[in-house]
Length: 320
Image: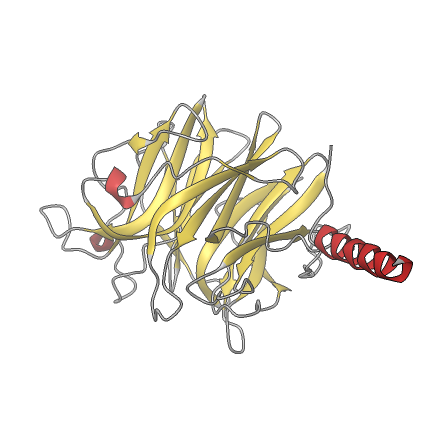
């Protein structure tokens, strides 16, 4: 009997250790992708795409965007699905990568989906903006039409190049939006956050595919994006002294992820630590169309360059 009890105790302790040190992926009850974290009032809000494709599906099925929150980077509370393509009367199709930012007490949620054929567009990928007084919604269409339609960008022939928006507000209050597939587009935003201020600009960072993420740290600006790897996307980055560039390519900071062709970066500093969010396909029945978000630590060198991000099963420790 004592031997059996000792065996059960050892097994239970082993399971506790395994569970305690296997945080990634951080969301396990649904399939999530394209992480977009922000910090507001000492809470991390994580906005995600939502993969709903079947195990046998050969394409994406993404019907809404989800939001989770955490105060310790380990325990994530589901806050609902506050936005979907149905939020926008002009939209049709799936809910691709999105980005939320706060300005003057309002939260602006920039989404990529597809546009109906109507008087404003012949279809193709488009970017919309929803707005709310709360980081968890409810959100409503802020414009009543798309901010970007396919006809506004002509450098690529394919109809899905206007995806993956990322918004950055500089210290002087100037807001910028970056987006694209196949090439990187960017433009200034007016203070109202729902109109462009000037022309659309085009960039071709080395190995760029999609999924830009822009932020500032100290005196440097960082542009991260999904790039061309040997067999699947990886994460490259550039550095500049202005959000308008010129951008200097600095290399790869994260290799391709397991069991997913795509990867998507998200960066946040919280309680004195730097965190790197991404997705992979490692959950049971997961894959390129059933992805899961992970988070690991991010470290910088003294000159501001970024060290390679190490993908771990352990993830990060709780912070108080």
